[in-house]
Amino acid sequence: MNKTWPFHLQIYRALSLEATQTVCELKLLGRREFTSCGKNVNIARFNNIDRFVLPLSLCGCVRPSYTKRDDDNPVVILNRSNVLYQQTAPILDHYDNDTALLRFAPHRGCDDLASFQTA
Image (cartoon, rainbow, N blue to C red):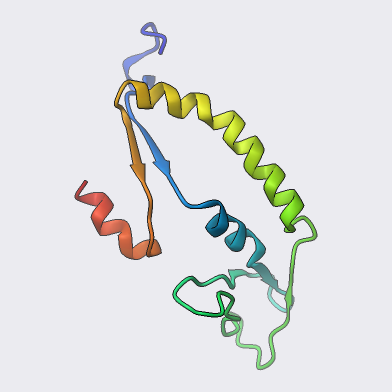
């Protein structure tokens, strides 16, 4: 870190929100958009055996329909993951070496936020 930066711009800690490759891939594959209202929703649920659950309509439609992004496919997702890792690994290494990196792996989504706040 450049010590000549103004104090309020200096970064002393970093946060790494960590999830397995499988979870990230399933969440990306689960992105949908309601065709009627354009609202986004994710159908990937990890407390369910089927993993994908179509939610009720957000806009009140009786028979909602969904669209999926063309680029949400396993090949593109793997490429995105590789680029993300290549670009963030040096940053994580820097803060990890200074013991200024807080790693947080939420296993229950928002329900894990309380454990993060007490860490």
